[in-house]
Image 1 (tube, rainbow, N blue to C red):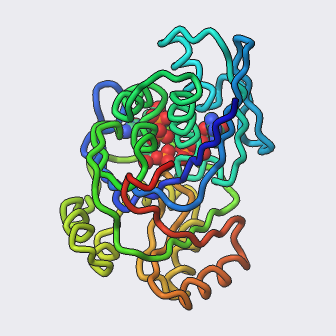
Image 2 (image 1 turned 180 degrees about the vertical axis):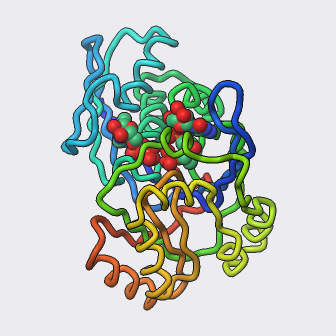
Length: 289
Ligand SMILES: C[C@@](CO)(OP(=O)(O)O)[C@H](O)COP(=O)(O)OP(=O)(O)OC[C@H]1O[C@@H](n2ccc(N)nc2=O)[C@H](O)[C@@H]1O
Ligand SMILES: Nc1ncnc2c1ncn2[C@@H]1O[C@H](COP(=O)(O)OP(=O)(O)O)[C@@H](O)[C@H]1O
């Protein structure tokens, strides 16, 4: 028996940090949306009581460090599942890029094993379990567009953002999320206006969305990797309507409405950037699976 799942990447349209918490995490407010750039997860039933992970991508761990493995072992232990699974990850989302690839693989594994192992859990229950794996996993369980609070695990659904292209460019570096949060000075933050972004999304106002994008982690990563700032400049030069780093980076995305501009950006960036994609947002949460 096999289950095939799509594990889409996310971008952060806003990312605000309110304060550092006693548990070491940061209290965040962020608006996230899934995009049509996805890994494929194939889950194959094994009678043997074992979890196996395979992937052709050399940056993806094939043991208990893999977030998809962690999702499987969590369900197996919690619900005393006596059989196993082979998890194959066909990786498209760049690794350690600020696009939540690993978190989305874990979320797709939770949703897929719920079916394969017939556990009968609903999405809310899977999202609560997901938070035990990582801060972004709960959002990825639902997909779509949402405001995330707490350390990222409190999810409030939002409607689809205005239709546009998302052009993504990732330089040839990987960024440690923990490192970026550690270097953030919470006393000196210029906060994005999360409520205005929510209003713009609700009005389906593309210009409003473009005006309100903001990410407080951007300054930290830009200081560590000046090439990220160069990509931002190039994107503006090629006619982007808005440009922002996603998550802790280093991926930068541009929002653009017109097809011709999208082609200009895509072709222009491919010349000097490791990985470039032009995709659509997936919209609201009803688009998953
Ligand atoms: C920055 C964001 C924005 O969406 O995404 P990415 O850049 O990773 O995609 C997230 O907050 C990342 O979420 P995720 O990657 O799941 O984080 P976790 O595995 O839970 O935590 C990794 C480390 O980041 C720090 N961390 C994470 C979340 C948070 N709210 N505060 C933190 O300080 C902690 O040091 C933690 O040990
Ligand atoms: N399924 C997975 N896919 C990618 N990376 C994974 C996965 N499982 C664990 N990892 C580890 O998680 C780290 C962060 O990866 P990823 O989720 O791609 O980035 P980000 O947190 O920036 O969105 C990587 O360094 C990688 O070693």
